[in-house]
Length: 127
Image 1 (cartoon, rainbow, N blue to C red):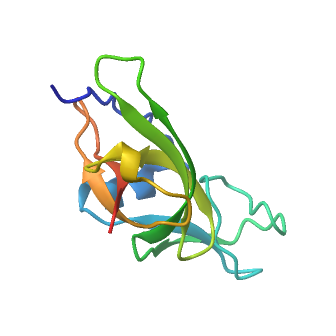
Image 2 (cartoon, helix red, strand yellow):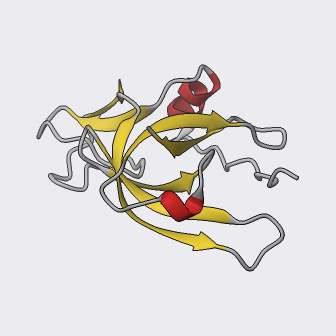
């Protein structure tokens, strides 16, 4: 039994991200004023307060920063923070793996999982 994934809320600030996700591409907001990528999407850079932001392609590679496995549910799942190769840390799920084999610092790669009537959601799997 696969875990049901609710569709994300698409806002004006996140529309470009979800459009890229529909195409199987991971993108991150990038500030052209200070040169830093950040996560989560917002209209103002959290580092320099500039509104000079653009969406840039991300490699889809990262490192498992921390995680927790939820086992007291019908379908166990792992929630995690993944530090992307581009710098930002993203709250996500770890999928398609043995949860007992997960380790902090482990390399991971993005996979997109379908939602119920919405864009696919980026999650990560160990590589």
